Length: 132
Image 1: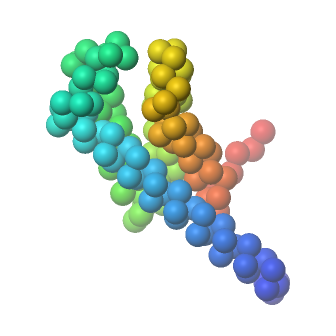
Image 2: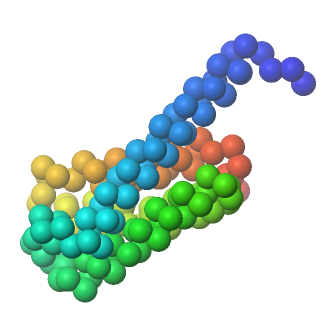
């Protein structure tokens, strides 16, 4: 079956959206995890204001870092990318809920975009399907 020009354009657009979302997702969780793992002063202070001590902050940071490593490994081993997205999705949801629980309506955008990007990555991945 031959691809029509319209289908080819849609497929190319889907790929562009997917890889742009992927790059943003790696950036978002990459810097957030490293700031937690290396205990950047501002990150530690903000996490403490949200109710997380040093131990929880480090645990969250290592969990996010594990997901970022999975995203990067997913460049070569495709199923790992989707597993990493599914692993990081609850971290994004948790971050969004914590910001809302503390009435933080100024800095919640990163976690909101993390939630949206998780879904977008799974929807635009040609190898991922949800069957109900």
